[in-house]
Image (tube, rainbow, N blue to C red):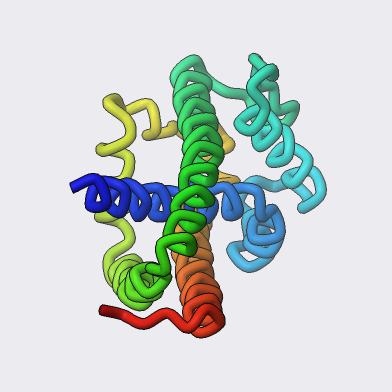
Length: 215
């Protein structure tokens, strides 16, 4: 019974570590937004040069990423009370993600040490084998009907309509089109897929190195 609890807890730790790491990597990968400014013609929509948009975007990211920055002030994008409230909620989600990343990282490290000590790396191998399939299905769903999934995402994580920005009071929404968020979701699940593949090869290498066999 004790081993079962450890195994379940361990795989939960690894799952949350992979998810939170992929989110952290995606939201801080500014190259994607820099690319989308040109690809999605964002400069034309907002009537602003790329560097100016990027400056405001970095200010937004600094606010969302940094606990001690309490005020959001984008010089070229005024915000309504509702818009600022939404970004406050997003900031809390960012902080939660980083907290999960740290705690699940510690738990994952402990669990892998346990598996190695018990000669059960084959369990990790099977986990990654099955995990590789999941992101592929999610990305396919995103490509087929992102609009529905985008709305569902906001309904799950926010209990209000503050995320429904009005361009006249919160013009930042013009600089953050839905297509950019779709690209971000695809990138996040691409990172998840990459981590599962890397995890598979590392666990397989360890499994072979120590000569362990499945029962």
